[in-house]
Length: 251
Image 1 (tube, rainbow, N blue to C red):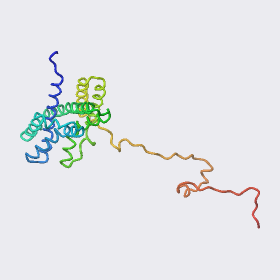
Image 2 (cartoon, rainbow, N blue to C red):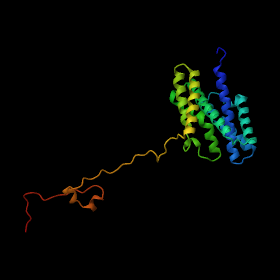
Image 3 (cartoon, one colour):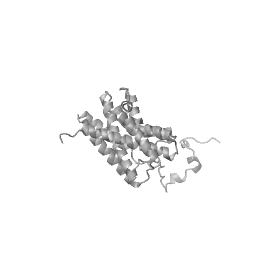
């Protein structure tokens, strides 16, 4: 255990996520029957878009995806795999889902920790972490003219990134960044995988609404019987004035 390096494990998960998202971007290109250029563009966008968006927003130097050749090579390898092999099997699909879920937590934690390192407060740091995790897939869907999948209709995904980012922010403030990274990866992976298995989704607007009902009127009252139904249908009731006592009509 003395030779255990958490950074090496996190880097491996990070690159595996880049590879998996490159394959997912290439799968979208295959569905749309694109040429190799389309495979490459969608793979790079899906795999590296979130990290580039994070580094651009933080303005902390050149994006890591452009300075570390391993990221570009992993994304290009994902595009090549998707172009040459049509992944239809059940086990291949499960493998990509698990790797993508692991990378989701890793990217959310990495974005949050980098934002906290440059001096941002916890709330914008969490937003940066979520954008890092889901930004690549969102940009990919916009490029092909689709509504981003994270906006609804799918199982929990951005929610897993949010939970991972919150965990990372808390544990980072407590001085345990490695523990926060590990907890974020495990939590996001478990939440997204179980949600995919169970079909958990956030409620839509029609599934969670409040209706204002009218108060029922008392029945059997003599006053209610003397009311004019036509007058009751016209908004507020008009005031009624009776005869003043002690006054008689002149004849």
